[in-house]
Amino acid sequence: GENVEQHPSTLSVQEGDSAVIKCTYSDSASNYFPWYKQELGKRPQLIIDIRSNVGEKKDQRIAVTLNKTAKHFSLHITETQPEDSAVYFCAASMAGKSTFGDGTTLTVKP
Amino acid sequence: NAGVTQTPKFRVLKTGQSMTLLCAQDMNHEYMYWYRQDPGMGLRLIHYSVGEGTTAKGEVPDGYNVSRLKKQNFLLGLESAAPSQTSVYFCASSFHVSVLAGITDTQYFGPGTRLTVL
Image (cartoon, rainbow over all chains, first blue to last red; front, side, top):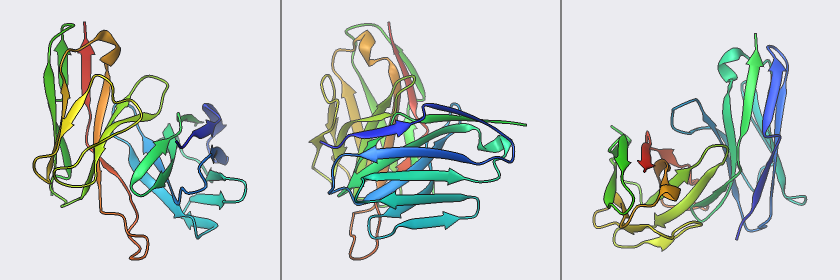
């Protein structure tokens, strides 16, 4: 089955800096790659996603890049703010079934 | 729209007891999922369903059973609870996947059920 590895497990940045979280996947058949943000005690919520026929997608301060050949994708957050502090999960999906990474705890220091 | 709802929000069980977690969605989604989330770990798929009357095993199905008798509901059962099943359980749902139609399989999550087994 699919295996997703996510790095780093924790990330601390100063407000205004950029943050990058990286994921690798094993199954070349995966074709949809969402990123979820989970605040403490809350449910995961989608923040951005990318499909396998696209190399990059941007939504304001958040961007995702996908390298299908290398089987890795990354989340980029620019101009970080304290409210970006949360756990971020990547996932690799195919035909509706998703495999999640173990999460990255992002802390943005004011 | 309520989205995805879960019942109950919290539950404490003794080892060997049984219980059923209920997930309901009002978005007419075909796919529904049950995950467990343990501290420091991601979401692990327990069982999922691609439509009414169908279920399939996920990554960690042992000790759990599911049923999807109605399209909007997905039930997760624990027949004989064990302390290893202490976790937060999330239900999720998504549209039928059709890449050609541009429909992606974004999953919408319920608020979670915190289960403790003593």
